[in-house]
Image (cartoon, rainbow, N blue to C red; front, side):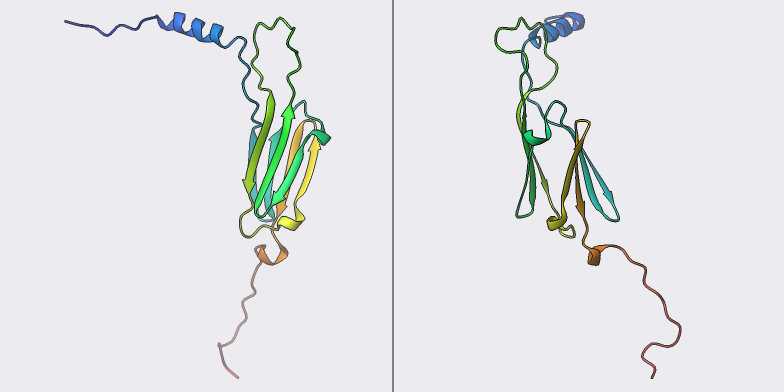
Length: 139
């Protein structure tokens, strides 16, 4: 009879994973929420620690790109025991789908959150169509 044995117990494996991650710095990828409503699309992107002038928002063809860098604040000489936050350059892209107005994109930043608003053109917004009485095509 044979048995499958893990080389390390689960608690020891978790400790090893914790120790291995102590000084490795993860890449910063700002999380983003995309909300859709009748008037267009709103994107909220968390970019803490990045000043407004440290962000580059660009529209090329139908792609909106947000670029920036969250600098590593500790330098090479710091005695770092553990780093959980991500740092470094990042780039996030969003395709502007048909039905949105790329010429009216608005970007604002408050409290470390970048908000992009991509409105629908006036002609694309839902509208109520009135129903008339009478027969169709009668003179």
